[in-house]
Image (cartoon, rainbow, N blue to C red; front, top):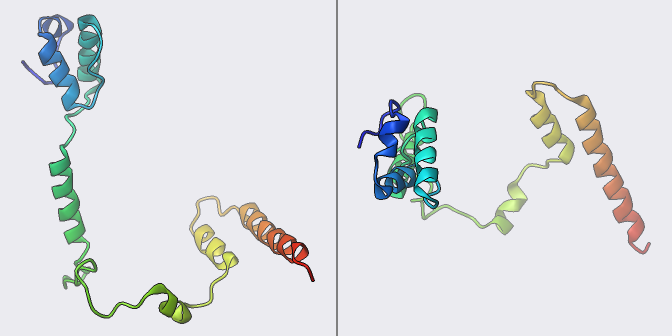
Length: 143
């Protein structure tokens, strides 16, 4: 059973149903249906160049290696793994007091600073919605 992109319809048509299902399963494609449907699905996947999908174990290894790469600075020094640190953490309630004051307008300006369109209207809309929300909250309270 050849699994290259050079599969002909005639060749795929000679495969047994189990081989067709295996080809589909490896690519996370639907494995149900009559043989004619499976043949069409395998041939189409071959023509479109759908690759074999990585297994869960392979994906975990890839993720772990990419995560390990993130622990190195551009200068080459290695940072400690944050998931392995046990000491020096404070809970959110205590840490909240040391957070800098930040407003919705600051976040909007930051997000829009490098935006390709630098859509000023979006910034104005966000600020207006924020102000209207504050206004509504003020009016709904019994003062």
